[in-house]
Amino acid sequence: FALRMKEYILSGDVGGTNSRFTLYEADLIESSSKMAKTSHVFRKTYQNEDVLEFISLLKLFLKESDTEENPPISACLAIAGPVFENKVTMSNRNWFIDGNQIATELGIKKLELINDFVASGYGLLTLDLTNQSEIEVIQNGKTCVGGPIACIGSGTGLGETYLTSSTEKVEYEAFPTEGGHSPFAPCSELEYELTEFIKKSLNIERVSVERVVSGIGLVTVYQFLSEKYNEKIEPLVHNSIMTAGDMKAKIIAEGATVKDSLCEQAIEIWAKHYGAEAGSCCLKFYPRGGLYLAGGMTPKLIDWIRGKDSPFMKGFRNQGRVSYMLDDIPVYAVMECDIGQRGACYLASKLYN
Image 1 (cartoon, one colour):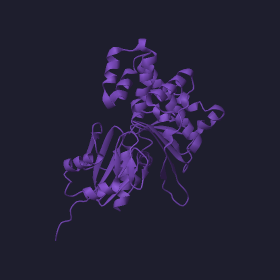
Image 2: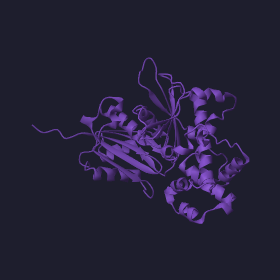
Image 3: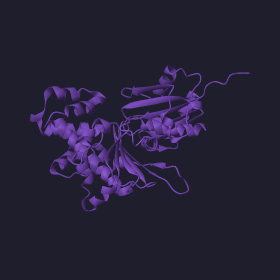
Image 4: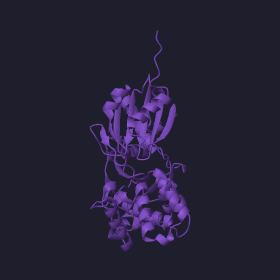
């Protein structure tokens, strides 16, 4: 009798800056919500800069994982952008991705595209709240079992999602939003100037919170400050930032350790408005099941988030007459960057089964 070929499932997390793919052997995937922690067969991260078509990255991954002739049975790709009819135009990368077309071309039987933050929402269900390498408690609050869960994450862009459960369905279900495109709310004369700078620079009439609370936004804030306070520019740092391509935000974050620098001021504005939008998220969803701070920038800039007097927490609690309502919300920083991958794995396994 013929031996059955190994069958694989594929998960992917496609952001504005990087594309991360993981291949699993289908028979070894656990059935529990912790399945995404299981051992993978092959994993690779690719930088998106200068890549013209997304499918070329996926082809390269299949080649490097030696699965071109035996492609995954099922795949779930978490994409930064709104997904409709298994298609997406990415918010922060000039790519149009058609899931059905990719599945046909690569021989993948079932391929589903989902919003990257929906994947992150499902990925939250795999986290161990007692493991400090995965979670840091920012505010204890009072957890309500089965209560709504909200997630906001600053990375290349700004993502938001929420999860609910019911008596009929024990498992949580995650829902897509484009909350990161809500209007930016300046709170000082300097921030009003920043708003006008963004409008003029981008030739737009409306500024979203993502224009500030994201990696791209952080760069914009730094550019504004460097024009306004030209005398404070540190030439070597400034030149490194301006020539860093997609890594500009990383250089700014590294420079923020210098007291009273433009980099530090830019990070403080980012953190304050990250907190403010997180607080607004809580007012909208009242997530007694917890508010989770995800995205690549959260663990990297945790020093501006943790602590009751941090710029983040000051922005978080500045919600006017209803500020007290946020005291009972548990707030967690997600220190594990692969929750989008975990959530995509969870859904790819469901497709396989």
